[in-house]
Length: 261
Image (cartoon, rainbow, N blue to C red; front, top):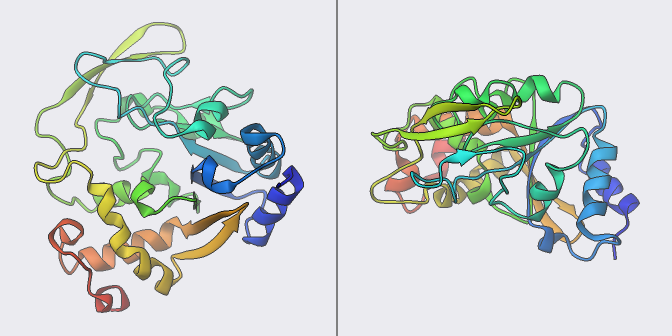
């Protein structure tokens, strides 16, 4: 059984520094038995990254639809697991106002980082929280999950204007603002006519990210993890997509020479 100190030591062993900016996608089950459970995991993360910026996705894309279209960040549960749902309710944690792809953040400057997400018109647009991870030198920690859960790659695709990723027609949502008023927003959601889950294909670059050093294999508790550098993930993806912009969907395998070139 792991203790809080054990988990902090695992973070340190990865080469992560307390002042780093880290986005974590997670499977609590994969971490294994922890003394105190999920709360201890969050205690370890928040204490370790207190001077930095700790972020977890608090997505709601699974439940938001034309009939269920009011997003209240104070009460709407995330569809991505136990850790995000507990994290976003903790003191000092702020949640962005994006109706489908919100994040929760903790640390100095967290509120400033997530501000304005209600104005995004797509899930991971240029200038949004996900795309700006690269600009702040952030790391992505995939704990017990694969690149199929790496939302940042959606942001890379949006930046590179990969076709057939967004719906042609907008969806309409109401975001409950901090003062209690409702703000009407427009969102062009993720959509591909042939493949409803594009992110499942991001694993095709698993080997490429490892070989180029954009990602490294690490451990957190029992979980096999990938620690990714956002800038390097962007550059490798850009290099590959320059050969064939829709290769994630159009190819069963991506030629290794594309990420080596």
